[in-house]
Length: 236
Image (cartoon, rainbow, N blue to C red; front, side, top):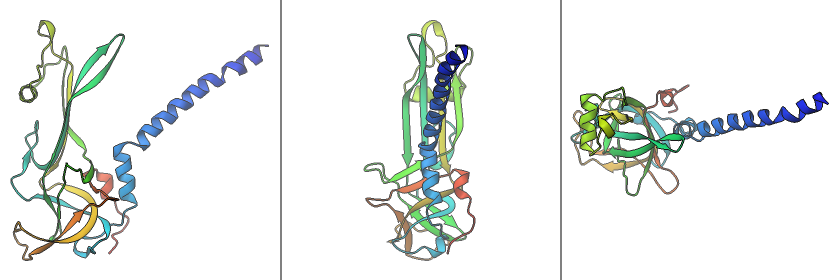
C-alpha cells in the first residue's frame, strides 16, 4: 500500500523538474545570442580580401567609423553602435518584476578592417536590415541602500527618470549597455556587393569597396561576442 502511494506521488516532482529543465533549455536555445551564434557557425567565413560578389559570408575585423562616432550614454565611449536598457523594479501584489522603461539602440555606417582590407556596413533601423547581439559590458544599479553614482544620476536625468521615490528613498533601478567601440574586433555577416566609395579611407587608394548588405531572406548579422571569432580555419 505504501509502495503504491510512493509510486503514484514520485512522478509529479519528476515531471515538474523535467518541465523546468526543458523550459530553461528552450529559453537558452532560442535566445538572441544563441540564434545569432548558431547562424554564424553555419555561415562561410572569408577573409575580406577574398570576398566574392553575391555570396552570403561572415568576416572578422575591427570597427572603424565613417563619420563622427556615436557616444555611449553612460560610459561615454566612442562607438559605431550601442544598445542600452534601463529597468525599474515594480511590485505587483506579492510578486515583483523588472519593467523596461528605456530601451534604446543606435547605429551608424562603419568600416570593418582586417590586414589593410575593408568592407562597409550600413545598418538601418527602418526598415531594419540587421540582427545583432552586443556583449553588455557596462552596468549600473541603485536601490534603497545603494545610491546611484553621479554618472548614473546624470543619465537618469537625461531620460527624465527620478532616481528617488517616496520619502526620498532610492528607486530600484538598473542599467546595462553594450557597444561596438572604435577599433573593437567583431564579426559581421551579409551579402557581398561592390559599391562606389563616397567617403575616402586613409591609406585606401580605391574608389570602390565591398559592402555587406541584406535581402528579403538574409539580414546583416553583427556581433562582438568572442565565440563568433573562433574559427577552425579560414576558407578562402
